[in-house]
Image (cartoon, rainbow, N blue to C red):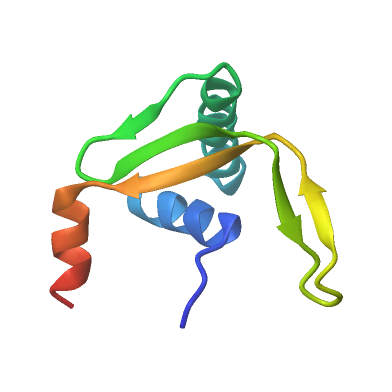
Length: 95
């Protein structure tokens, strides 16, 4: 299984569009910063044909320590989620 890193993305942009490595890294940083900023501000981020990133707010609840079984409070928190689009699920499911 391959992992695509920030470096891999930058090199693909460089090769495909003739960007310098520095410009490719800047472009990736700008995109990820914009996604992070939007999510931080409570906005959904939708990429047509790919999917949607959202922030969900989870309330506090009682859980258990898996090692000891002792009940513990799991604090309220916000989590990032991703829901793939139907088109993306079909593409991935057909491989």
